[in-house]
Amino acid sequence: DQQVKQNSPSLSVQEGRISILNCDYTNSMFDYFLWYKKYPAEGPTFLISISSIKDKNEDGRFTVFLNKSAKHLSLHIVPSQPGDSAVYFCAASDSGYALNFGKGTSLLVTP
Amino acid sequence: DTAVSQTPKYLVTQMGNDKSIKCEQNLGHDTMYWYKQDSKKFLKIMFSYNNKELIINETVPNRFSPKSPDKAHLNLHINSLELGDSAVYFCASSHQGGDRGYTFGSGTRLTVV
Image (cartoon, rainbow over all chains, first blue to last red; front, top):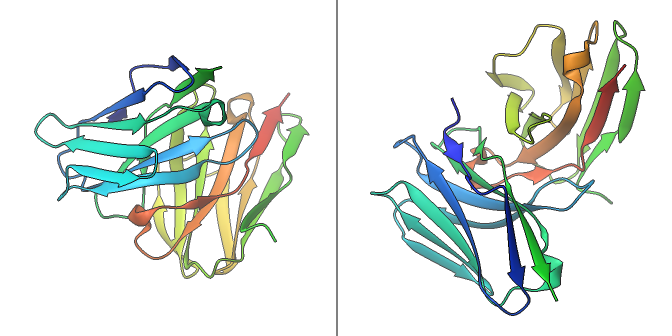
């Protein structure tokens, strides 16, 4: 029973354009959402997060939007850079210790 | 001075063997985790320890046994390895209430042949 879903396994974007990565969740008890970035042969690294009391959080080129009624969040990267090419994992928590992860979206930013 | 370090990085072993993966963190975190990333790239929690106490034990075969000698270390011992245990195992740590984000190790790729 996968509670966090990333339905796009891959995304290709041109350098300088916007990358939009989407994530849906099913558990209405989730109250904290995070995005992780993963390069090959490395562990995931924390990118940005958002609490359920907010609908937007921004950090430099990265913005996360949360739509609680739709149980949907998205990560926007503007402008996209080739170094952003990685796998992006969406994760969610219900104030417990465990993070529930999606399967990831592989982003390729082409020059 | 890696924050969360796992050893070994790669492990190839035969079915039926017993193996251990070690994890150490130097961040002063009090909670540590083991996650498994299977062939479908799905990251799923296996165990969580807070101050050496087991707090999460997901549906994992009892061939898998975590051991936390102190709050900076969380090792994973696997008995009677099976082909289906082949995966990448990630250790992670966080402050109490890990929903505020983990720091992950670089992973151990286990291949059972």
